[in-house]
Image (cartoon, rainbow, N blue to C red; front, side, top):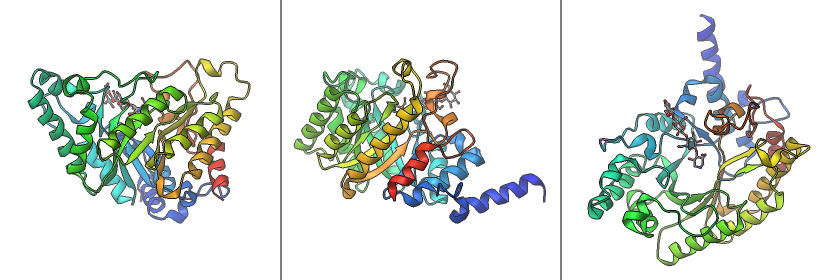
Length: 347
Ligand code: G3I
């Protein structure tokens, strides 16, 4: 048997034998100590990386498609849908007994030529809008446990709803319409409204939570709040604690949906011990989430497995020559201080 086949065999062994998946003895597999689903963002290309696959399967119990379940990838210009990579991610999760969180159906940032072309015909637009949600969710019914039905609806400063194509054609109720369509498409899926900076910007959090309350009052089947938590190591830990407490106060499911803690960027320029700050902020996230009533803890998802997998280190987002270190595992797949602290906080 040649070396590659031998390794592949070993890899398969590790993938299917959780006991072998433990990392240095002092850091057991994270999912084995987590009292809630522990998620990780995954791109299709990660599935072809055996190191990524082994580390992800060993430590996480849920996947969120970082890109390939979004309209940007799935909706082609001719109006057809391509599910190939989302199917592959779902198949990978099924093979290794992982849950799947669906991200995301409606987002201001991605509307596609198909919808642009329908702008002048609100009825046709609405049919296509509902049709998209129902086709995508229908395909993954019973596979995807929850969906970010609408992503990032609120302006960064909290002044109100963001302008977007959906709102332009369908009005403010584009959100309620999306949730109704989602409920029809998959009665069992947990339906989320997801946004970022809810910890950094109290005014945005207030507007977002008011939006949730209005949706609920109007009968929208909103069941969960996704707080992304793309945060920076200079954030005051108390900001995280307050935000998660406020978010949980609505009594809905709470998903820390895209956690990463950046060590780069201007705010950190004068921080003496960025890694120490990062650990303190991470502790605040875990402590606050652990305090959320268990019935509301949908799960906690990190937005990259290893530092090198992070969007923050992509060509478009990178801030300067030194790579960011926002993840729980380093580039070689070794658990970092945040991973060790996660385990310690679960004891
Ligand atoms: O992989 C393709 C490549 O084949 C192609 O040549 C190239 C052409 O542009 O695109 C590549 O895909 C990129 C994809 O990431 C995978 O790397 C897309 O261009 C790029 O737009 C996409 O960026 C993603 C971004 O959302 C937009 O969808 C990031 O990975 C992803 O981390 C980021 O995640 C968002 C959440 O969805 C919402 N919250 C904020 C978060 C960070 O921005």
